Image 1: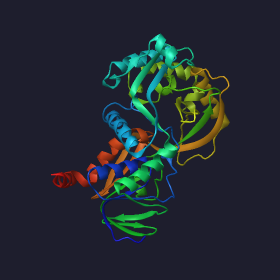
Image 2 (image 1 turned 60 degrees about the vertical axis):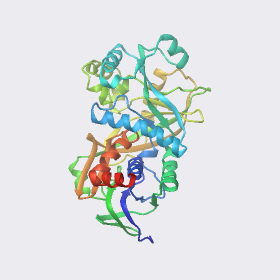
Image 3 (image 1 turned 180 degrees about the horizontal axis):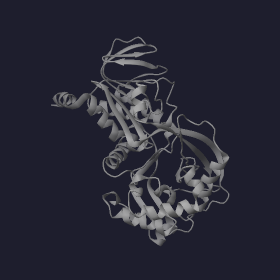
Image 4 (image 1 turned 90 degrees about the horizontal axis):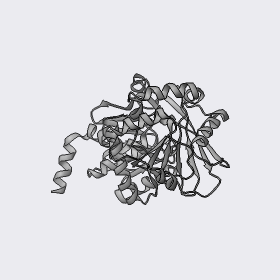
Amino acid sequence: MQTEKQYDLVVVGSGVIGLACAYEATERGMSVAVVERNAHCVGASIRNFGFVTVTGQRSGEHWHRARLTSETWLKVAQQANIDVIHRGLYVVAQRSQALAVLQSFMSTEMGEGCHWLSESERHSKLPYLQQASGVMFSPHECRVESRQAIGQMAMWLEGKRGVDFFWKTAVTDIELPKIHTSSGVLTATYCVACPGHDLYSLFPELQRQADIRMSTLQMLRVDPGRLIKLPGAVMSDLSLVRYEGYTALPESKALADCIAREQPQHLAQGVHLIVVQSADGSLVVGDSHVYGEAEDPFAQQSTDDLIMQSFHDVLNFPTARITERWVGTYASAQEVVHHVNPQPGLAIGIVTGGTGASTCFGFAQELIDAVAGESHHRKLSSLIH
């Protein structure tokens, strides 16, 4: 590492939270470097659906993070030439109890902008839908292909925003203004560390105190067996007993009890259904959630079977076949985000609810505020005026 440049901010980690922090800092006129121990992002940020979810997020602060993030994704995608493959979410209520949950949800602040599909809308937009009690549409969601989008965002930040990237470089210690790495020392006024599910390299004692576990997911790419155009993401009843925006509603207990009787194996494996489409027409389908002290690298066929059973229960694609499988992972805790400040000017930020893509830009604002505070707002204001 041959640089004597002094940065306003060094970001540790090139996942979606780290890149969102780099973006937010450049919005404030800061000079930024991103340090990544791998040759490119390989973690949770590229192993997910690329689905930016607002509807169903925990009410209050986290839901507002998601609303802000969805709006920012659309702006960033346009500037960085990232393809937004589809927009919106269709939540399919298979059971009467699920319909009651969605009706209750629609009466809350979070139901703003959502509406019920008429029978004719169901047939025109989702002609391959199995029998359903009702379908709620949310306009707030969008979907990008995360495997490409994360790399495109990094290239855009480097090429158009002047962010310096140090790849294949591990951070070994942080004592501001010095950030010690495997390739040398960087100097910065502030630092934000976004380690994702790497909980033991930097400040491991702080991560242990947060009681963070690993969630391992099984994900599938599916050929639907015919040419289709999915107008938006699809969820169903199993999602309504996982997402806290729904589970906090009193009507959710009856649905949870019903699913516990009818689909106990799905609950045991943390299976819920999300279906999104890729540009090539294939579907990304998932997922499951198994918790432990470390990532479980071994996928189970029985779990794939449960996911595909849920898929066929909702969508009528009898010849659909799995073309790709992979394992994802993310840090999980009781709280949806983990944020600590071990020293002045340094923040550690992890989204611990599996919603990094959905809340990254909102959370990034909080992390930059935490290290730079109002001082940098005033600095930026003086530059503008």
